[in-house]
Image (tube, rainbow, N blue to C red; front, side, top):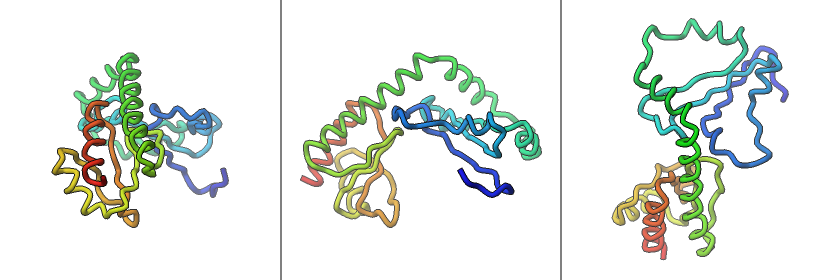
Length: 181
């Protein structure tokens, strides 16, 4: 990695726990080798604590000391306790990841049979090519009880789909089939 010696690299590893690709590498080794890197992680994804706004950073002691001056005096105690419980509950984490993978499989198998293009994802969401503008696709899917993500210009004929329970993803498939035939 080539970076100016005056720069600090910020790496968002929010979806770290979902990754199954054997080529994936966390950037933690860069911190261990005293590089100017800050890695962020969150309890919002696998741990399901998005509304509690809990996360943490990993960096060198020198960078952490510089960041301390930006801390607020208050802590989200409820969020911290929930995060501690969730990080200790390995079975729940495994369950969350398994359910996400099963949900993605429900959708990708359907899309594959229909020949629909999508971007495979190592997260809890994916992008699907709809061939119609998202501003038309969203309300059409909503009529079938399915909410899909916002537009991502300039990719206005792609849909961001967050994973839910596998049976809920089947509802997406049903709605998708009705909207796009």
